[in-house]
Image (cartoon, rainbow, N blue to C red; front, top):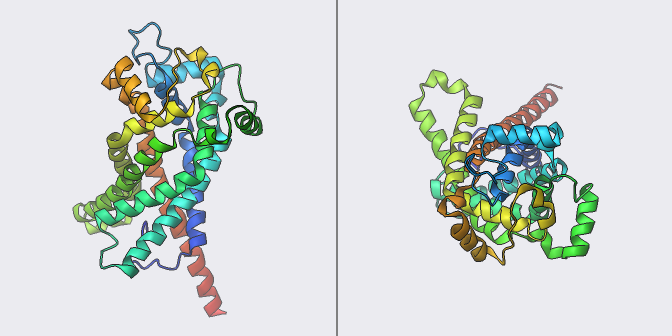
Length: 324
């Protein structure tokens, strides 16, 4: 279902229905993985070493961080920035999947390449993600600011955050971290789609035919594995993006430890390596891999689920119409 397949029986899903399925999958997934995302962002923004041996480290483990956030900020802190995050997920899911489906269909109609090819899915997936990223980057910056702020809060709500950031930092602040985001998102999303397709094909070869009715489990497992592989290969750029997005937001970070300012992507990478060592480039990798496994698995799982649901509803409607 993911990507145009001329051999597939499910061909009557319109672009609008693809957008609905993509948005719905993003909505459900975001609600489920928000706590992991908040923990990941806290790790990424911490200058101090993520180790219990470092007395200055506020956070150093997933369970320890979860317990500390719960104790200091309450249960709702795990959904900080959830409104902009949901807007981000819903919009991103719609744009990404519509663009991907259109691009793979274009490849089929305008070139000799097989649309199920690994490279085709890599390029189309990367381009689709770049398109979606350019569309929702301001929402991503807002989501990061909300997830990063401690108590007392700098931003009371979404409207206050937008107005304050615009007035004090200018309109370009909503696109902080865009360069590393674009650099990272193309291979990350491309690898997601490519490995998802590849793992689906491998699954069909390995599993016996009688096991093929476990399609939902297959989609979830293949999506999770694809997410882990792609996240590991592109992780440092996600870290750079988060560090750059909170630039000009230093006063809200004081409660969490040291703060740094960066002039750009290369300065950010250089400072991290010098002060935190090469291992600093992978701060927050553990919750990020957990999030990648859950989010990518859920995204593909729910996308395929909603696409099949919409197709079934349409098919049922057309059958009743013919009978009538």
